[in-house]
Amino acid sequence: MGDVYFENPAGTFQVSHRKALSHHMPASHFHGTYEIYYLMSGKREFFIQDRTIAINEGDVVIIAPNILHRTTNAERPKHERFIINMHERLFSSDGSHKEALGPLLERDYLILNDSLQHRQLIETLSRTILQEIRERGSGFELFAQTLAVQLLIACCRRFREQGAEPPASPSPMHERISEIVRYINEHYMEELSLHVLSDKFYFSPYYLSRSFKEVTGFAFVEYVNSVRVKEAIKLLESSAMKVNLIARKVGFGSVTHFGRVFKEVTGNAPLRYRRRG
Image (cartoon, rainbow, N blue to C red; front, side, top):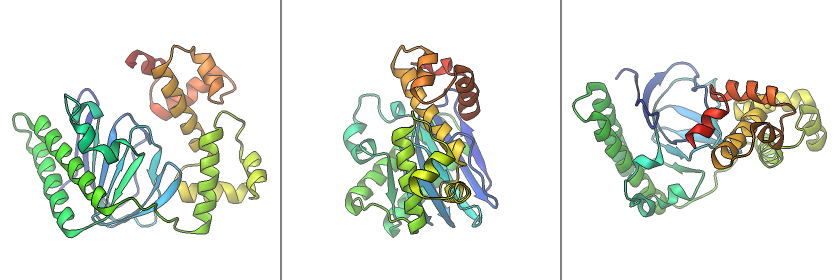
């Protein structure tokens, strides 16, 4: 089965299938849609929110909107993955999804471990979605969206059976970096340089820089900027605060620097998000 990519004009529904022989992740690491990531073969490591999680063949990860994430293990590249990005407004027109998808709506992410029965259902739904996208018969997008909602409901049922166990860190070093990431997530509005955090957490700047990239997949400054931009988007969408005030509130020294970094991270100017809201 070859690679497949589809995105609707509104950007509310996206399907991607790839047999990857090299490490690759799209430029944006947070978005306003739910992401369903089904690992069809191989092994990956995922950095989500503040921790690294090992994902095995048959596992499904579902990530809520605007949660920072990235796959990290470039040294184990061979894998096949199927990804759906879908806006919540496509789940149902009357809010009836809220109960069925409760576990998903209440959390930043869900991880579903492989069980044979669950795997067969996920595999069938995924393959049918891909067939619809490839053949593009009449109503294919709506057909694929209804299958994606079925896939989400199946995952939420499986999650209720499986229960929520917090994933273990792959190593003590991962746990130390998770601690630093949590600190950044909470103190993004303050001065956050490699030197400041090296002193605070007793790392050498070089070791912190190298370990941070290895664990999260992000360069240190790239991660800090991504967190600040994510928080800025929330303020742009939910308030009438002026852009220069938002820039200062999320930790940027100047509105010019803020504008440049914002464009680098999102591909858009800040006011694009205000008009959306």
